[in-house]
Length: 37
Image 1: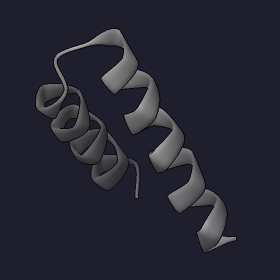
Image 2 (image 1 turned 180 degrees about the vertical axis):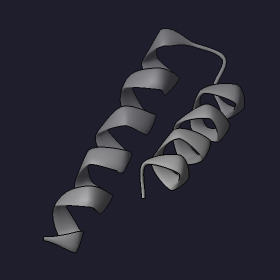
Image 3 (image 1 turned 45 degrees about the horizontal axis):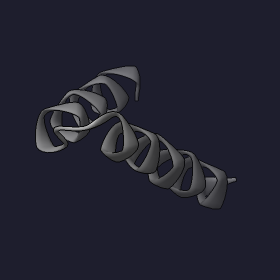
Image 4 (image 1 turned 90 degrees about the horizontal axis):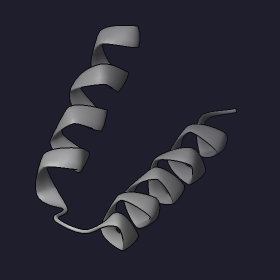
């Protein structure tokens, strides 16, 4: 599971070019993980 998370994080950071985009990606990832539990 850790490998999947790292790959998703790397893809998300590569896809956004601004600090605001990084914040949105992190928030979306946190909501996704929260939905798993």
